[in-house]
Image (cartoon, rainbow, N blue to C red; front, side, top):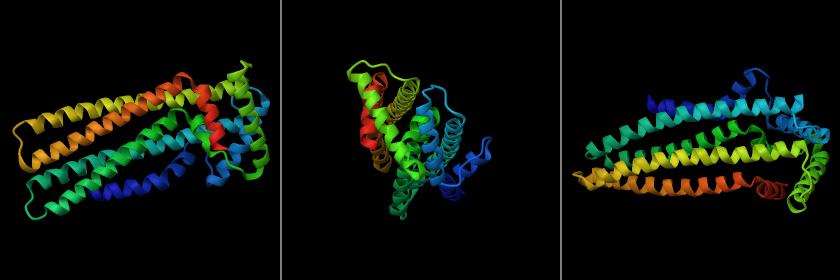
Amino acid sequence: MLVALAVGLGAAFVVAPRMLAGAWSGGGFADEGELGDALGEAFVGYWNSGAGDFSPGLQRVVDYWFRYHVAKAVIAVSLLIVLVALGVLLWRAFLRAGGRRGVLGAGGVLVTMCGLFSLVLVMANVQGAVAPFASLLPTLTGGAAEREIADTLDEIRQRLDESLSGGAQTTPALEVMIGDFARYHVAMAVIDGVSAVVFVGVSVVLWKRFAGKESGRARWVSGSFGVLSVVLSLALIVVAVANTSTAADPGPALLAFFDGGW
């Protein structure tokens, strides 16, 4: 049952979010090309308007992207829960098994890796839901407004560079971009920080078991997961610090983002 649920949720993660986001109030887009065209046209109009508030066209795209990431996050959380439950069953069976240890161990490793990947999906989609406008920026594509988008991005880079190096005043639209870009990194810093605390707690429990009365396979499993938890904790802390630094001074990072992306 858990394997069937995991397979079904994995398929749903790929297929369902677009339909769910479109079915939610506000409508959706047929494919990525249509989304890219709508975003490009709305983004150019938003920048040229000089206003800080989103235009109706851009607000529609941002709302859709928020719903899309919420749907993906919910499915990813469900998949993570199923994979954790399946992993616990497999590793418990591995500790009790006789001749099937190799198969159960391989299955446990595979499910553990899939669970970690699901965790990454949860983190990324929660971040996207918190700051949907910033997470939309990399999806700016050519389409019908390719030339207009290129010109707009050049103008944004120039205005942002002037504000950072020469103290020139930023436009309301640029202020919104900087603010949402900072929020995007604050979200990941918080997510990574919370996840790091959880993995630190898990590693403490596992190392206590490793140092206790466990022996044989149980000791090996506790030690292996203890090492994995420590490594993940350190990696999450590093990423959290990096995102905190970017959020504290988002302007240079946003300029580098625009320079590297287009």
